[in-house]
Image (cartoon, rainbow, N blue to C red; front, side, top):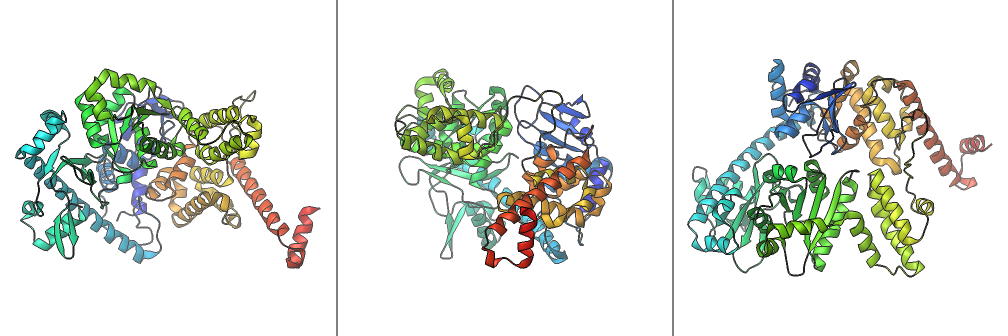
Amino acid sequence: MISQSFIQELLDRVDIVDVIERHIPLKKAGANYTACCPFHSEKTPSFTVSQTKQFYHCFGCSAHGNAIGFLIEYNGLNFLEAVADLAARVGLQVPAEQSGSHSRSADSEPGPGDAGEKAHSHESHQSESVSKKLSEVMDVAARFYRQQLRYSAGAISYLKKRGITGPTAGHFAIGYAPPGWRNLEGEFVDQAEKAQQALLVKAGLMIENDGKCYDRFRDRIMFPIVNLKGAIVGFGGRVLEHGEPKYLNSPETPLFQKGRELYNLFGARRAIRQAGRVLVVEGYMDVVALYQHGIEYAVAALGTATTPYHIQKLLRQTDNVVFCFDGDAAGKKAAWRALEATLAQLADGKNISFLFLPEGEDPDSYVRNFGKEAFEELLEQTLPLSVFLFRELSARVDLKTSEGRAKLVQDAKPLLAQVAAPGLALMLLKKLAEISGLSQNELEDLLKIRRVSASPSRGRTPRPQPPSPYQWLMQVLLYDPNYIEKLNRELLAHDHDYADEVAALRALVEFIDSNPHVRESTAMPSVIAYFRGSSHRVLLEKAGSKTLGWDSGIDLEAEFTGAMERLSEMYRKQRMSMLHGKSLSALTPEEKQELQRTTY
């Protein structure tokens, strides 16, 4: 376990500009440095590095962090490896396991007490050891499956029938799991039988039932699943001919979570950036067949619906994501789930579109029957997210009736509420107004959606206020933690409308209280590192990114005062609402006086 004080010392000694410039060229732009983002494809630089605050932020894909975070994301290191790398650069020795109130790893959740710290440290080391062993097991299994493919005439014949050549099979490290119940065990003869079986079960390669263990994958074509670090974390197995299930995936393991991984994303990264888009299909064979025909920028979900994690990963690679589904009811249902997972992840400038293939075709069959050019011509006829959204919603109601149009508005409300991209949100609102027959103002009032003004005010544009005082206070405290002394903590009560923001702000306040040394140096990188593994990380990173332009001419006292005034006003309104909700007989004398003071 690495102490918070060591992390702070390390980040104080390194210069994030030097760290990042070892990997990508930076250009001076005012107080900051800019570059084209290394985490997604772009032509106009939106990746900003603040030397003053020692963190980076991309306004395109929202990549954000300090020097440690950059090495983790760019080089695929884990937290400890990134710390060791930076420490070696500045001549610091990474300390051994420590105890004490501040001995928490910067990428772990805050926890109470020293006993919790030691337990967390022990569990962390155990977890790393188990993950390493499981990774070794997966590598051995992958080699075994590839060797078995060479000896299976049936599996080779199947791949040839599907049009898959030897080089393509080699590129994807495709293998074969032979028939039989305990083939894998022979590859691990150097371990005790029970330990060997337990490890294979934990890796998802064997199944334990009534005290007996047997291979999970039998008589299947095997597709290794590789994470963004290039490590094998799971497998997908397809039956050769007929049988159920058609595809069998690894179960959830310490290495593998289906909702977070995409097949071939690691291998397709370069092609995705060159093509300027990524194609998301449904099956392993679709990806392999497309690659065989020269379309190398395809990935697939792993037998699960598209998740927000998938979208985040994809949008870091490119600005253009195309979902390709069959044109049947199941395909449209899968496409709708993908749309729902996408809305909250979108930023203006990002494009999500949908391609529905003709009935009876999938990407594998279509590209084999008609070739690369015909398939890529289809990619020029995709449905933009906005078109697909309103086409589907409109098909569910009768737009000729007032009731149908009212139902359309209600169905659209929760979807539009998720859209954080201001430009897209405005366009969708205008389109809904056009379809429903309501004016934009009427829709805004009805849906309670905040208007986004497209016309700038004359003269100097004031800095826009954050949507909530909690976000505003997070920005101020991240910029200068000394303002914690002026904070009225009685106002940080639970607020149902902003529960996540209140929790993040309170966690930030607790961190500053327990780590007073952050007030004496650049606070931002230390705080962001500390909350790396926390559920509050996204909100704090977002708040931190808003302070990039604060280095010149910012009136910090006015910012803090404005935030506290807004918070006080919100508290007053909530208090009055609560008092008015009580019957007069239920009010205490003090509450009656309070109500009278604020009413007159």
